[in-house]
Image: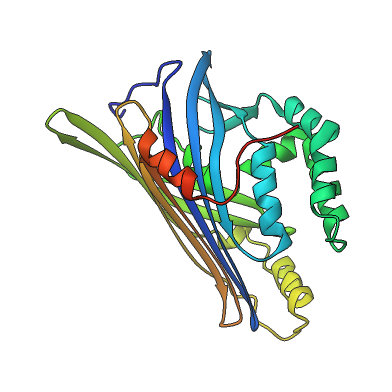
Length: 296
């Protein structure tokens, strides 16, 4: 077992998260970059479970689609979020979903209707989808378990073994109605220095072809593009790297996942995490162009 200790209640860490996505379908290109400053705070233990509070302190998104602006609004709605991790560091529960749902129903939904009153197309669908998600706890928890910056905080950093191992990962709904099954090779390494200790977890992923529904994926591509004679052969590249200190706090991390079909369909997502201090957090917040606070 690796030489790492649990955080103590009240311990916290500040992070700068950067997420970038690039989607190409035929000749159409959509890109966005999101930056966030967040605080993770350990607030208690319940048996082998650990309870953390995630708080958004600042954010900025560069993108042109309605969904990009909406993503920022959802970040505000979901902060603070109390999450429960099991003994293996995996997401087990969201403790305060009822508070978020109450906030949405009492004031926030109406605020967004006023904000987007000129956006007639797609708004009501987003409103309805958000309401349905907040009513379904299992779906809400699942939504945090995709390939997003949340994934940095849901790794098996509690009982990692300093040897390579194989594990499965299922990204539900990665292609809309189609899941993306992966096989990960996980490798832990320990590093020591003078008065220092940290460990590193790396993942290399490949497509789990027997579990991948290629026929359904092919139908999805045909519906998306209107092209009926295309190959559904999926190429995939996935790499992840996570660095921890002796108290199990992340100090740095990178994640990259690219899925591609020939030269006409590509989705690439990258996420970078840096642990920062209060001064750096304040400087970033001053430069970001979107407030992170919820106002009733």
